Amino acid sequence: MAVRACGLIIYRRLQPAASSKVTDSIEYLLLQTSYGTHHWTPPKGHVDPGEDDLQTAFRETQEEAGLHASQLTLIEGYKKELHYPVHGKPKTVVYWLAELKDCNTEIKLSEEHQAFQWLKLEDACKFAEYEDMQAVLKEVHQFLCSRE
Image 1 (spheres, rainbow, N blue to C red):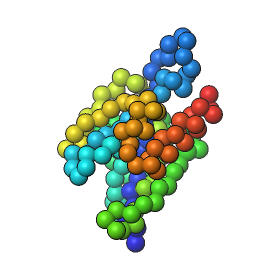
Image 2: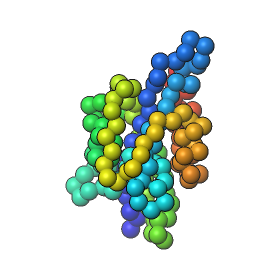
Image 3: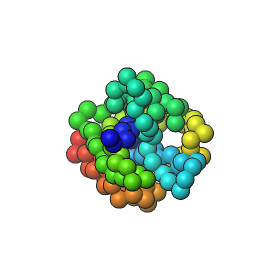
Image 4: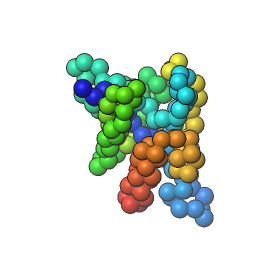
């Protein structure tokens, strides 16, 4: 059976400069793991027994980034499932999209992560080494641009 994990792709909007497009002011939150290869990823984690996927995504976000559900706005119409092997076993990760209501909210990391960054799309894709994560970030950005 596939391991199942859920998380949130979190973005914030900075005040755009008068000359820039609204979408240029979007930054994505990535956390750097404190274990393994120290890869960068949105907050996510394994589904606990009796928990639904979205509850898991919000719980993991609170545990890993210190962000409570009340500080986020879940964006309707976006949900993405990724499937890939981890240590030879199948893994499914489900992501939703959420906007941070106050772009100055403090991030409080758990011991699972050693650093965080707010990154514009291009840099977020450089930090997220995995192609499927880069594709999701680009897809999310396109989704947000299409809503402007």
